[in-house]
Length: 168
Image 1 (cartoon, rainbow, N blue to C red):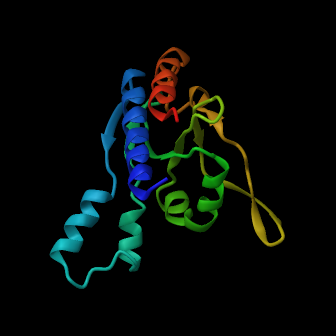
Image 2: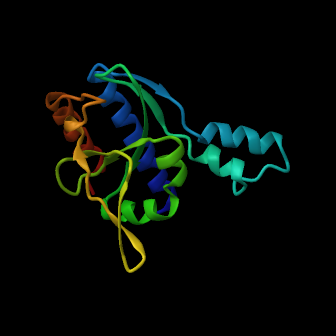
Image 3: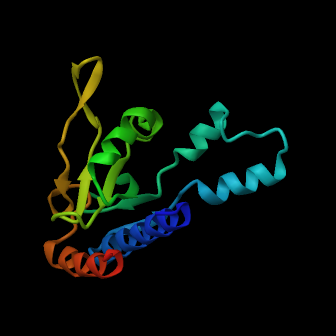
């Protein structure tokens, strides 16, 4: 799969999750780093995406969501054909997302149900195996997240859309 295809699938996942959350009665506010990084890089010659500031900006979650409990929740959306590959990525790049933003990660996948899953910090257990943190594997169905409160009826409609648009 090309990089362009991955970007398109990621943007589709963001749109699906945004619409799903709104259809569930959540208020969803778009954040995201793409536009901000693009503008800063164009304006500041000395700005680097690899600097500490660049990494912090790049870690800005996709949305802030006001769901069931009326408290703001930061949400990062990811699409993965193979959900296990996201755990490997999170091992290396989770610090700002997990510790600074305390963001929930909503995963869109069509490998197996549930197609929409949520991971709440901490993303990994404190235990280690061969020096690496053990993935918590506490992905929950999105319908079970008490802060967001997306209903199964709405989720089922969006699972059909995910199947349709992510079909190979």
